[in-house]
Length: 175
Ligand SMILES: [Zn+2]
Image (cartoon, protein in one colour):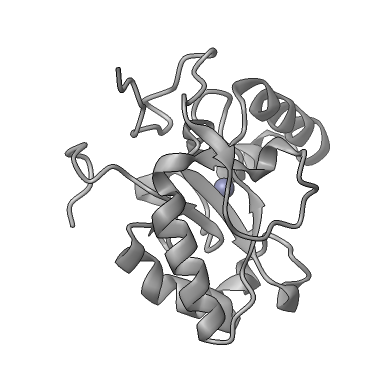
């Protein structure tokens, strides 16, 4: 049975024990080691992801996966670490609370490139890789979940590196 969760945001949290059923190693280069769970995504995105990546290579670009699937418990660690190190205001703006991260669906992926030292920073948007993704990711079914100037709507700061593959039949996204 397909019990996949497609919609997650601050108001639609996922259950603590939700783990997608078809996680596997994503078919693009990542910066993390092969045994890291960051490498995992749902197999349902693999065709689109690999097509998008090979087209980006043909365009002379270097896009790398940084972080795909993230469990509820890993998100909890990241959230708490951020509260301690950077404070609550910063954390609320940048870090999803446990259960509310798109990464837990296995359908989200953070990407970066050598030009910004593989960091997840706003400057990524100004690199050829960031510019190409903004223009082309939707052609492969990916959206940039947290666009520029959409804090009021999404509740998050601009994240040009964060891609999400929503289900076209979920009714929540219009193409
Ligand atoms: Zn992300």
